[in-house]
Length: 633
Image (cartoon, rainbow, N blue to C red; front, side):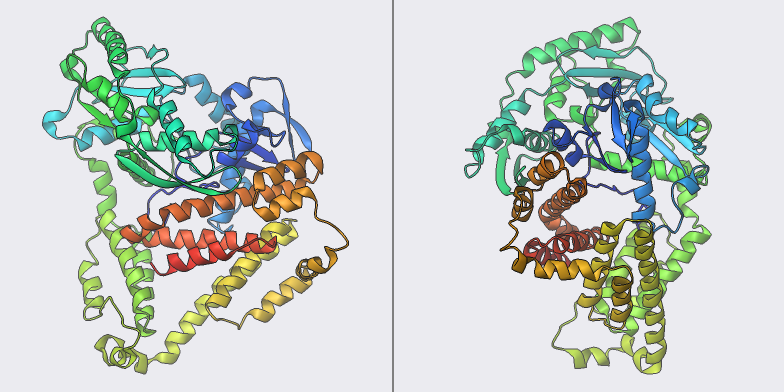
């Protein structure tokens, strides 16, 4: 969750979704795009895609210096991923995963195409591993109430038909829209799950890359496919965006729906209509009762047109980002209502939610409108921060916290503090002119500066010292357990932040850490490398690394030089590069929405990438410029 009390993604590769591909590097795991790339291009022996099929094989993978059966791969990887969240987002304040096994609320939300066996394959190892506060949820359990509550009363149907895609097949699932109980067996229509425009869209994108398409296309297939799917799953008529290619270069591309051929829809429409009508007839259901809900890769205008062009057109609803966010908000509300005891979360669903079915989620409203002691404490802290910013003449900082708090209060329907907030900011102009300092000092709201300047300074400095000591303790902890690379990245990130804020009081303390753990030696070696380079030439892998071709460098370090440590570094650089690319393409969206949380997350991640790039002597001008752009939003 983020500061707005909403679920947010924790993506190692950036973006909003990641493929279920896993790579094991030493005693750590990577899940997502870089793992998929390593598996499909065979860049690493311990990278795997198509997890459910792969884990059927009687093979082993190398983990922490020992061989493990492949069927343990998802359990180890997901557990490691949760551990990263606890350490990287909570800074170890809640302990590690092993100390939270019995109480950690663990919720698995499964997409429609996964059958019971696959769900049990994922959840059973956690139950056997001692995780007691665990819950497994099918997609329709959250989706159907969310969709039905969003529809006008006259448009609410009795039967919900959920349409999804499994590889090349189209899946139809029939549910009671009120009780979400299954009404019929699953219908699988073979060969109708692929959008025929996908290949055409991929070809058009590739053909438009005039400065790049003279190179082999095969390494770029996943990049092209992801871009085409993202466009087809959106509501955009045209797209102008940037692709991050396998060699790390950024290529502009554009695509329009007018270029895509819809002629194949007629035959598909007839075939799908036949299977659908047959299933309805066999189960005594009427077309007039039905609502089509398109999810996942089926949520495109192509499948929407299939159902709307049938002889008796069905009402169709696509599940896009808005609906997904509503689902997650609903899940969070249910988890909070259950006081984070999730093991029986949906066993009580019929009593708590479904009756009455369209009550606008009275359960959620009761939970949201009454602030908890934790909520009240959060408001007090944020209001105190606003007052501190105002006393320090930081109008922009005060309004940043004010906007964040205001949004959070609105989302949770807490009106109790509206008047107090308005009075606090009354008379304070949002726009502050840099050349009018004398006028700013005359503003009534800043009078407290003369009343208690020393007290304000002491409070801020104490807070800064607490945060710094916590971060320094985390760095030392990483060094003690042997994670020197992560410690160096964290240390350099902290040094950059303090330098940017022009704070030098803690320089000696940071220097002591470098000296105590021998981190200065790495810096000295880096500074001397240019002089030594005349005697010792760089290896081919090192040259690729300096050129920014991290995927190829990783392959050479792993397979040709046997340097697993540098291969692991390349994995980190690949993820950092993808993050940078995603923040380049997303800056306009953040600028338009003025989303403070997204801005702060971007700056934090980019500073991490900056420290990593500096550690290995890579060019950082682009990252530095991007950080400045985000800070000016």
